[in-house]
Image (cartoon, rainbow over all chains, first blue to last red; front, side, top):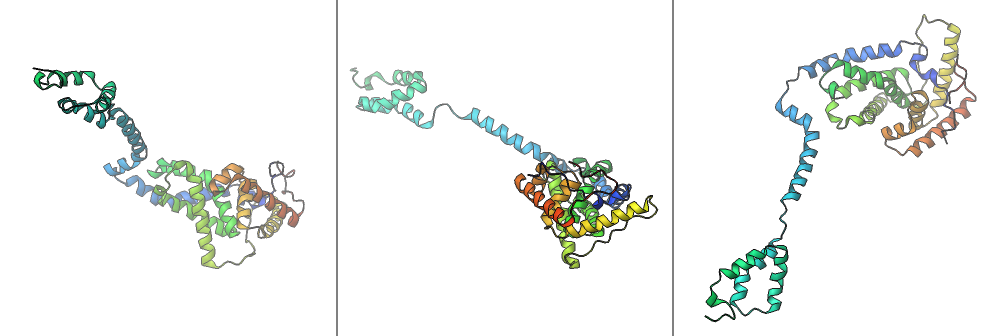
Length: 134
Length: 179
């Protein structure tokens, strides 16, 4: 609606309308009044905490993003439950294990290491293996 | 803004140059008195410099600073218990060429000031920042924290009210209103 409307002529409210140097003087007054505060700021010592504070706005989000990325790399590929199944193989072999009991172990070994299953069987005394007669 | 934080005078000078007119107009929109608007604008720059650490985002300096100006102007009004519709003492500096033109300008300024008193503070602020300072709808919306459509609406009704009160107005020495 206002895009097609002309600006309302209110230039006479601008103090510079009758005094072209008005803003120049205003600016000089502000700068003069601000002199002490500017000097105080320049005199502030460059402290470690000050530097850290000034950089914190950039560092904190950056560190957070880096932590997220690092966390993604550190997540283990196999969860703890699957390892629990894998390490329970000896117990299962000692007892009368059914296929239903072993199913989770074989499923777990698909994502974990097949070698661990083989090693655990190999190192088990032959006399104690189910179905193996001494 | 960061350089001004460190006390660099040229950096602060740049901020003053960029926002001095806007500061004055925002203050004027609240106080409707030239002297008060001038004082408020000047004080607001000093307060802003003292509290510069509180402005978290340099990109939002304008909005943050505008809020300081408005709050100080309102505080001034509260302190002095200014009455609505009080005339604005506004003295053109002496010694300028064209006394007739100055008189014409002063008369127009007086009429405009009276008409501005009929607007709401928000309408005054919007119309001053847009039509006098040249801010865009989007800039005003961002800095006043309102939708752009609301800014357009305030601007439209403010202009219409001013035209109703003043009729066709022309700047002294100008060829007419700018698009």
